[in-house]
Image (cartoon, rainbow, N blue to C red):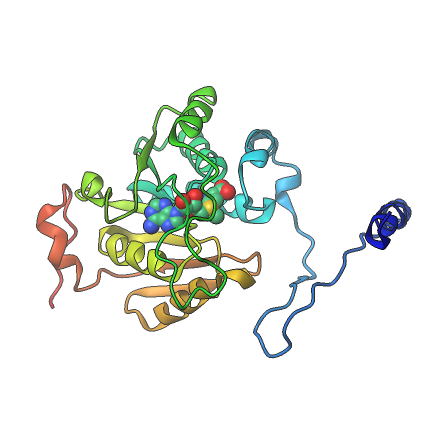
Amino acid sequence: MSPHGLLLPLRRTAKGLFRKLGYEVHRLPTHNPSAPYETVHPRATYAPWRRDQAFLHVYRQVQNRTLVDVYRLWELWTLVEQAAKADGALLEVGVWRGGSGALIARRAEDCGLDSPVFLCDTFRGVVKAGERDPHYRGGEHADTSREDVQRFLDKLGLSRAVLLPGVFPDETGDRIADRRFALCHIDVDTYQSAADILDWVWPRLNVGGMVVYDDYGCAVCGGIARHVEEQRSRPGCLVLHNLNGHAVLIKTAESPDTNDIAPALGSSPPRVAA
Ligand SMILES: C[S@@+](CC[C@H](N)C(=O)[O-])C[C@H]1O[C@@H](n2cnc3c(N)ncnc32)[C@H](O)[C@@H]1O
């Protein structure tokens, strides 16, 4: 047996002993000291997801179909409810096996939102990897299919969730171009994908609407952090860094670029001076 194989049971026993004493033991990851990354351990202890039976029920249904942890899923759960105030459709780009998308769709139905929830994925894996994404080559997370995710949504009875297979917005944006949006969840891993999605959705986002980035705090998704930092100077936009790893953009005012698409929209926002 390799030294690694010998260490594993020892490590498990030690962890189990510490857990019985009320301590969690984690191995500290080795981070490049000059990079802006470290494992974040906030001292806050308020954890309302532990007592929210509706959330826990859905969490158990989706947890084997998502790469998103309980903290970010909880934030999505709460933001869907808040999104009702901005009155518009919901959008997720980066569905993979459907976990976070199903949770968003379930919460939207439970909150009585009657707008559709559009779930977009290539179902061929990550695209548009470039030099700003040193950890991605393209094609990662292709181990899923449209049919499998549709079966999962059907099993959960999520009739308002609509799958849009293809690169978004390039191949499927046209199908929903006349919509207004209240919430967009971007979980696509690469800089250019995220930038193209934001350019498309921002003028269609209602004031008070939000864009949530899953990968902002993730060391292998440096392209997403870079893209989000570039939004800090965007007019009419608040950028929040949540220590669970999310970045959240909140639209506070219509932007001049809305004029470019307003005529195509069903319920047009007030036109603003260019
Ligand atoms: C990390 S996974 C999404 C994880 C998922 N949200 C979950 O609950 O685990 C990233 C997904 O983004 C998809 N993707 C990346 N860029 C895309 C784009 N421009 N349009 C559509 N899908 C994209 C990939 O196919 C992949 O399935």
